[in-house]
Image 1 (cartoon, helix red, strand yellow):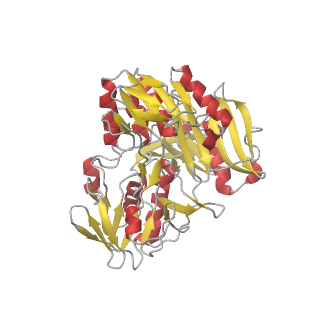
Image 2 (cartoon, rainbow, N blue to C red):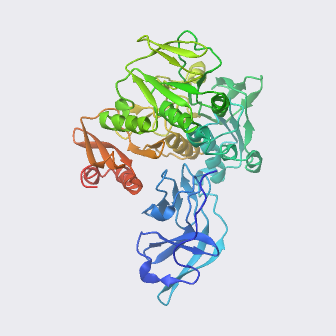
Length: 520
């Protein structure tokens, strides 16, 4: 899955480079033994790592060094400089490492080291560690939790239960490159089937959980089986909101959440000429871009005046609309679907739009039915504390379904892939008895043709948006502020700025954040 490293560039690091060229905290791109390698200096130590992120192949030489980590500029994956271990999603695999030695004014790269997979964790070996863990939900959070548990050395019984027929997949690609035809299906599974057996993860697919008994610590599955647990993680995600209009049941009307959904849309698109997307959400607009890339005539219908205005503001909304219109997407804003026919959609305004394919992207709702049945505390999501524990001490929740206290103590629920993965990783530590707060800075990216929006932080409301650069030129930083505090930073064409904003949020450095959108 993901991009491939390009042609080798830079110096031959096996031959050596002047030590003065390897500057503190600045990745230096070169190669060794026919592979691209980056050198990073931290004090007296020099580290050599693979130059491509193991997520989508992002260029780590353009990334950011923070402490003893190197972060990918594309989607903010984080790697340990010393071991290459993938510390934070979306990367799941480590990057390669080489021996690096400084002597007589030169830095040389030597032998390649075995990859580092496991992470240190006292909880995995502590007395009282759970004998069995069940994870319900095989999406971003559930899969990431299972992987992290094994990486931490957990050796007990581990079961991952999914309702979908497919194993865990790269969901962001379902509306992006896979839907547009630019990513082959072999990129979509997060792991090959044999990987689960190798990691001793029992993966159960196409079998929803139907009940949880917190008193007897049992999960009941749709096929009648029961699974006992010492600790349980609910990562049931969210379900797409269905369009409730006449004709919404037609076979050419689709939502987009699962691999099966994306496959069905692709199959229909192959024999369609016109598509109508309902909703100017991120999913809706990404689907519109992907279908347009397939050569379909694409219309977008939404009740708001601008796409994404509620989330990103008027200026970004107008910009995104212009990007889509520049590629031929047609918008019908301030309108709604009234009914859907076999070949035509009627809008509330009375307008009629020919459509062979309809994709509905009008939001999702947290999948709380299991938590409701178990009598856990639920309020617009499963309520969890800062350590992702529910109202039942041995049950945790993570991902789109979880409503957690943010950095300001306000309960929030965030529907982003990387957030869900990192929440699952934090939950894994706490399932093993650690007491880690989930205080990860939210991050997401959204692709619209050749434009990518990177967003760090979380701003449900703001009183000011400061802009530096030009959205039209696709080179801009926007800072969302309220009462003088910076809540979020959006960038276009400025990947390292996005990484720097993430670090500033992690440090709680409002003085540094004040410069974003004005001087960067």
